[in-house]
Image (cartoon, rainbow, N blue to C red; front, side, top):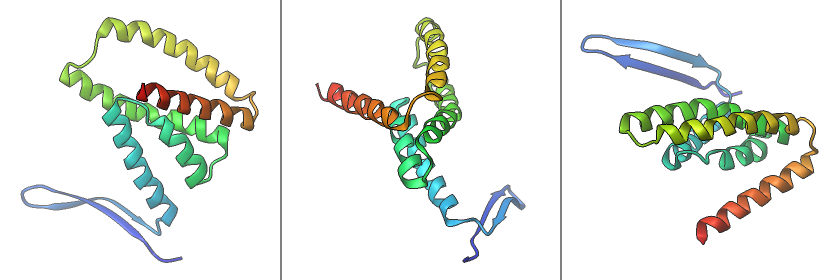
Length: 142
């Protein structure tokens, strides 16, 4: 395997500090990180929706099984959503009362969805996911 080194530095007025140095980074790590950058941009740009790109990316490019791709996408979206949320708070671009009301539904719906995900067949999951994406695309065009 070809040796790949990833190093990150921070420089102040006088010194250059090495804050990360990783050797023998597998190429799929770099590809995954680049895909994460793109999905993070999509999530931040549209204020969500990165999951529609994240799940197919994790299953088709990274090679995760369907259920694991869905579960991983949800976990990935958490820090992305928190960062986007903080930026939107700073910009004053949200409605607090609406956020509270919708969050209650999201929490209950997320728990139900996570329980169902464990008991659904992959083919059914793929069909539901495809229908939702297609319906969202059609709705966006209308």
